Length: 175
Image (cartoon, rainbow, N blue to C red; front, side):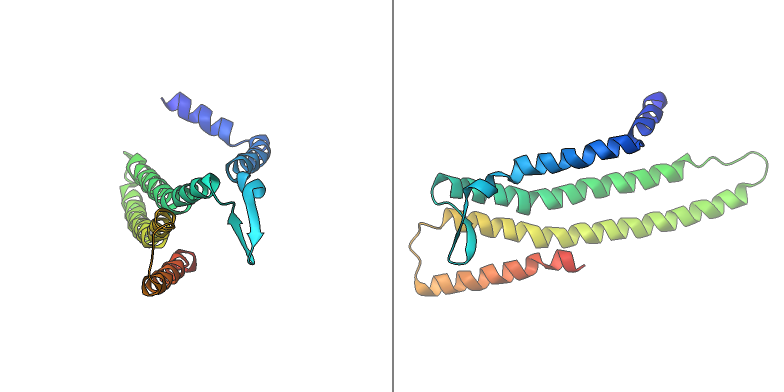
């Protein structure tokens, strides 16, 4: 297992790999979002999806990409980061020859860093969830209820709710 980890680190620390990954990421995101370059129209000063089946698909796509993926990715990467820091703490070897005090001090510093990092990751995740999930729910509701009859009062309340959710979605980027 250690041989695989060493070989993987050696493979992933190459500059040539970075030069290949940058255009690859660009091409992948172009494939993921390129349909919008073709199927979007500018009408009434806003860039919107063409009506019909594509508009429904685009709404569900936006719910997944904007409402669900960011909190899930933050949660997974945050968990992996905390696990990595904790593994570094447990990998510290105490020497036999009497320099244990230095290692204990270093372990204490690592524990403080671990605690601070854990709080930072948790706060970022707890900030991401109320920022992204309501936005995804609002998109889903708007898509499902676009053909429903709504009174002017209900449309006004929904407009207030939508603007509040849009304002809340900026909260993550301000932290």
